[in-house]
Length: 556
Image (cartoon, rainbow, N blue to C red; front, side, top):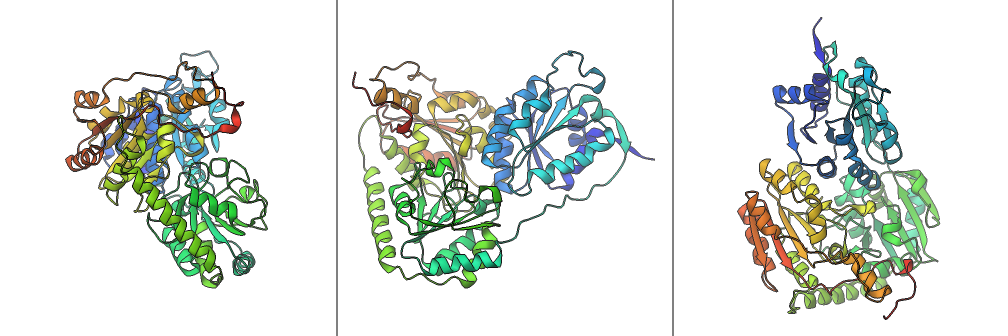
């Protein structure tokens, strides 16, 4: 009987399931798997400089491909612990991440062994499942279960802990079959009919579209529904790419991180059809400031427990966003709401004029909105943008233009600083023919700047735009508005990140002021080199988001 070791078994399962790229940081806990990947030659490996960053790369790769992203925690103990942040990020982004986490050998467990911690318990609260493999024969089946669970229903991370000796243990050779992933259908026909009736009665209807359309490749179905009904569509936070920028029925991102037109639509609507979104905190603050108290809501989500959880739903249904939109387009009538449509178009014209005015700001240091306008006007239509969390990215959230499917990757509900650079590398690995731009503040890029070297070493050229206001901008804004301008810890000084890129073998571009950002971005993309564009922006151009968290503003 032919035998293979555990490392080869893992390799075969990953290969069979279309996982052609994995991310990690080399460690001693699973060298048999690394050797199997080397000898098999059909799975690319991107070696990061920090396991957290490797996890973000795998997260972004998963969002781009729709497959589970795989990260190798190749060193038991500290290497695995470093992935915690990435798993928490994936959990709150509903991103299908599979962590293969090295663990100490079975014989050494529970002996206060070197690098021994309770890894299973550590990840349990922040994953769909955290489980230890204890039998070599169960390694492949449990990895298949992890792939299935990560990518079924509401997606999320699964952590599979594998003792060091299982990678070396012999098992009978086998050829795995692809894992079957169950997919949800549309909402029930009775619910579809009820939503269609509700729309027929609407005077001020809006469609609230979320990430379910991205995971379900549902952009065309959403556009077809909007075009048939001639009803405005707003996007949930972080999903401003659910429809192309400039589409006549797309208002952009709603809520506290959105624009005034989209937020007014959701607040003033008499009927709101929510598809593939939760109406969660990031999109609504759970407040009637963003969702009208009297709005009649039809809510459809793949996770039934999310439906009607934060706002009462007149029609509550479980189903896939794309399939529900297709079924609804077949029977829903065009609502009789021409005044609402006309008001929407007028509001969008006003918003476009406001954005045009921002593009003409000439102040020095450069206003961040001028920089964002130049970026918006320069981005190729197939560009992928990754955003961080922070004051600058808050202003960017609804000021960029996304045209192609899967063009925007953000930290979503975890609000993670330091996500964008690593995510850009993962996105580039998934879509090597598309330009990828990470937009970050100066504080954020400091978290993972060493991964610039990872991009260069792995021939994954990305552009990192650093909008440098010499501050932790969100916190500085709060200290200025609510604590009398008493700044402690808010102001920072950073190195020349553009020069650091050059030291790593990439390209650095320094932007001096208005008019320079667009040409710099064009140069970076055309070069096909990993490039850092560093631009000083106005440190006073800050905005506050959570005014409800603090006491009355102080003046001194």
